[in-house]
Image 1 (cartoon, each protein chain N blue to C red):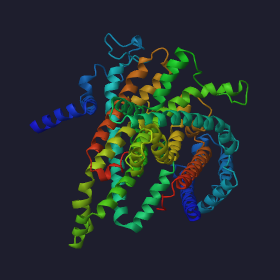
Image 2: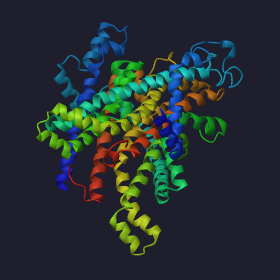
Image 3: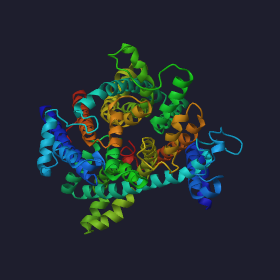
Image 4: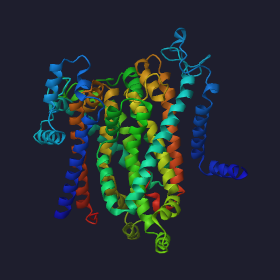
Length: 315
Length: 283
């Protein structure tokens, strides 16, 4: 196990280093002088020189990378050109919204995808299975922003049950009841990903139910519901857990769109706005943090998978 | 011809939903090719007097905030949907297949190439596409490249897996021991056996390219705003959703039905495929 942890962690760090080089190179791949692109044509030579120095663009490229990566390791991701505040502060301001949105979305995904996937597997081949599998494929084919716009139209503009946009912090007036602002966005974000978990749970349940120990359990006369829960589901969930890392990445990607639809002050909307404002240090910082998060979550998933199922071998 | 009719009737009987999906895709292709004859108005024909009209009368799907005919724009939008789909598939397969095959045949090169693919896969897909858009700039062609890059990685992975298995097949070993060169093995044994996994992958890539392009359009980073794409139509209709909700319906429905039909067809192709490769594609 020790070797496994070491090997996996090493691979994750290597991937992170490679990814950080790509993220760093990004600013140099933009056509034209990034400083002029960021400041616009009306910039004075003094402003240009100041920003160039602040971004460290006077140094040789390789030195620039090491300065940037070294600062990042110490928690300094540079300054936002638009806000003139540290990038970490810009990200921290959006973090609460994005983390809560992801957590609530995960609740929908797990709460809907797994039980419904089990139901489809238990009723394999019947009309209910075909109906649910069809529904899953339909949900996977729907753009999240379209679902979001319809949710706004029906539940916010029509019925008035939920607010249509924005999100005041739960630490401000209103407290936890402010979470109602995240109900519709999280449902929109959950739709395609719940469909994925549903399909995966179903497929994994069917795989496990063909195992010898399931047949043995049935032959021993154990109650069918107990076989489903104790023998099939527990083992089938392993494959589902391993998909959580992937689901998380999908959530982050799609949150960019969902946060824009619902005007949520999250990290995803910050990315889109920073792209439109050409605020490159913020884009770099956000992407670096998200890649880090993604690698850590995948690493944890890999390690827990191995702990849950010791048969998993090193590749 | 008779064989085609016979196999289509078999499909309709066995998998009615797949047949409906295939029919819808045929409709989209027809729209795209014959748009000027099918659409009653030009896609950009502005008519300020008749703005935000509900469906009915002379406008089958109503009109938008410039008085442009929604049905005509939906019909012309299928051109861009097809262009994006085909473009992304060609790019993803055109780059992913050589990377995957070369990696399987030359393990040392493979270790480097597959590691690079892993690194690209550590970026959440839409963020990777957005990053590329920032570098390349906005536009239809750049959207194709950006979305194609996402599916280059998954395609290369799948092709790599399939090619590794094929390389170990007895007939490939036999060909090699008889002195067949790499080119011969690739063109006569590996690529022909890869056609069905690639067709499945192509249909899923085509489907997800629709969703990716729509998301880029919606964020204002895809096709230029004057291009009648379904994603742009949705982005424009956003402000009018309470006054003219039908503007939201039609382009959205086109995206959903196109992606859904492609997923149905992809699933059907996968079910007909060699069971050894079935689990490798379409995850």
